[in-house]
Image 1 (spheres, rainbow over the protein chains, first blue to last red):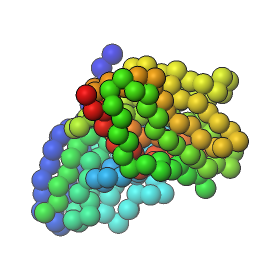
Image 2 (tube, rainbow over the protein chains, first blue to last red):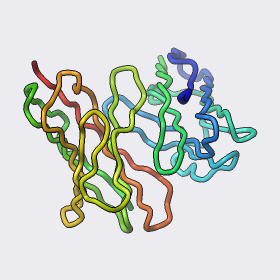
Image 3 (cartoon, chains in turn red, brown):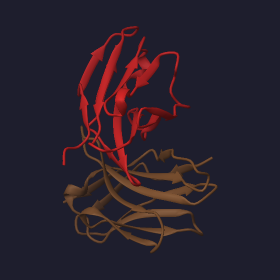
Length: 111
Length: 115
């Protein structure tokens, strides 16, 4: 079974630039999450989708972050414009039953 | 509000010795509890979970965890540590009693196993 795919694996941008991350969940998993993991901290939920609908985006900084999951499969997370404090690993996870399966993450560095 | 605490930033243990990584939680309803492991430049890997039933849960790679409701703890244990167990370990909790879906992660505990 293929796992959760994410791209790119690494991204370096300057502040105020825009960036987008892509996630392809495990086939058949209806629930998809985006997490932000800052160095030295645990993952923090940004947004949760159930199929193509948003379940929880209470911790998503909506002035600069946006996410979509068209057709209920792949998802993209965008940051526009980026700030220095956005430097982190962005993890995508999909869920079957109670277990979440994580992708390898995208490491973002904002200079 | 739900929360999870991992009181130790780092745990050091010699290979072959038993290891314990501590986790305590706070929820208003019933908890689902999880342990994940993260190796460098990798995503989180699921180790084990407690949903209901037996308080002692066995998971991957010889790890186990004990759910203790009175102490609101879910410590991760392994009888004999391996050098390859060295990694970052995260405890997580989901409060299902309130009908919520959000999983809250602890800050992580770095485990060093010395040969």
